[in-house]
Image (spheres, rainbow, N blue to C red):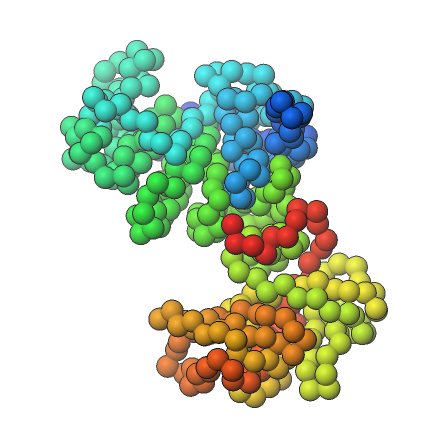
Length: 394
């Protein structure tokens, strides 16, 4: 068995102990956090109920001030809930100090000791525990290999790139074999290409060692790339919980539809209902249909979202469930795709992503008359919410 495999086996063993089969890694029950300011009480987190499974990569996603970092800090023990309960593998740790919880945290700043080399930075926590030198050497070596830093053990932090420093910080957090690793926007200081590469590296490392990662980010692409499941938060509340596909394809409300990627949010009056399809008023040669996923009645205003890549733009109408005429307002060429802003006949501006494939013969210019088409299955009914207008890119 390789040293990394031995490390993984030891780490999994350290997670075992008494039977924890089926027990969530972390549970939050009615967790609320109030802060007192000179202007009164501010509720940063409100009645959060959350169950995070063992061994999953779980993300808390939302704009600045939504409560995601406060939630993470309460899990870590750096903040104490005003109300509610936090469980770690079934044990109540609500009032347990941070240094007594079997979790570690990786911050935005790597906080490496500048006078120590890579090996000593990773070994720091183990030396404080006064573990035998042989065990320290083995465990540190395993983690340095796992994070792809083998051969750089003697380098100081100033000799490392930002991505390499992040790997060292990650190894230092993992070497103590926590039952959960908490990460607070750890990639935000990296440039785009390195950040994207590190996203895949983090997911690989998490999959190899199999412990629970809880990841805080405001970057939608980051959360979609790495998460097994995720929550979208706003104003201290959970707006939606699900896997990345569910969150993107089936947004629960206007805020989620607008915050995750780009979404066209449209409204119309229901003229008739055919089974689970609502037909919205349009002209004789236009069709607007929405597959219902909630309550609706004839005469009601219905709000629904359509992702830009689900629409097609053409010079003639199609037989799709939805088709509406419009006028091209703006064209943006992006190499792999062309983005069209189209003003529809009802007066709404929508965005359409058209892939620049060899088969895409139609090219349109500002002022051209076009037809937009999409399936009724991609018209996703939105529930009302009080999180505010989420259509702004944040």
